[in-house]
Image (cartoon, rainbow, N blue to C red; front, side, top):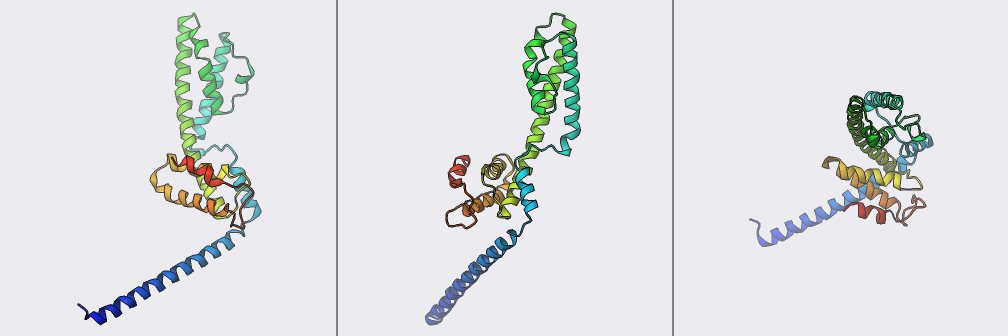
Amino acid sequence: MFPPNLANLTNGASTNGNASSQSDKEGSSNEDSAKEMAISRLAPPLLVNTLHAALNQALYYDEVALNCNRILQEARDLLAMMKHYKLPVDGEEFNNILRLEQVIHMTTVTKPMVAAIKLKRVQTSLEERRVKLHADVNQCAMEQATLNVSVQAALAGAATHLHSLPEKLNPVARPLMESIKRECSQVHVPHTTNIMHIQHMTSPQSASSPATPGLWNFVVPLLH
């Protein structure tokens, strides 16, 4: 134990040292933030434009490409068979099937049409193919959506760190919130930090604030 006077002196030195250390850390942090912002603003316009475009596009990924192509071909084959058996599938909604959403729609709306077929053998064959295709396309769409959440959140994070927010903030904020809702907890901290960065950049005090205000009013309801 220290004598009383020495103990007071030691505690005072420790307190002053901690305060000085804390002040140095804050100064270093502010300096690092300023440097990071200055560097990020040097991002090439082509990179920024590409990020913004990708945030507004429907992307398909190699991980589901083969399965997706198989499903689209099976949908066209099933549609051709339905036409062969005179089912009313000649409308515009069935022409030129190119997306998973179209296959989901087709396998849903044709259910009563197939059920109404009087020839039992034909009805059973078409129904089995329809049910299998419906299950396959929904599974593929789910995998596509999972990949899309991760990729879109990564793109939104990149745009945030580059201090290059688009005029409309939804394409950046929504992927981050969707990722926090759906993905594992490991991504919650960086994405929450990105949202806080967006809030800071869109505050009235920020010189880099885009035209769209009130991001926090949009984000808070999504957190619940």
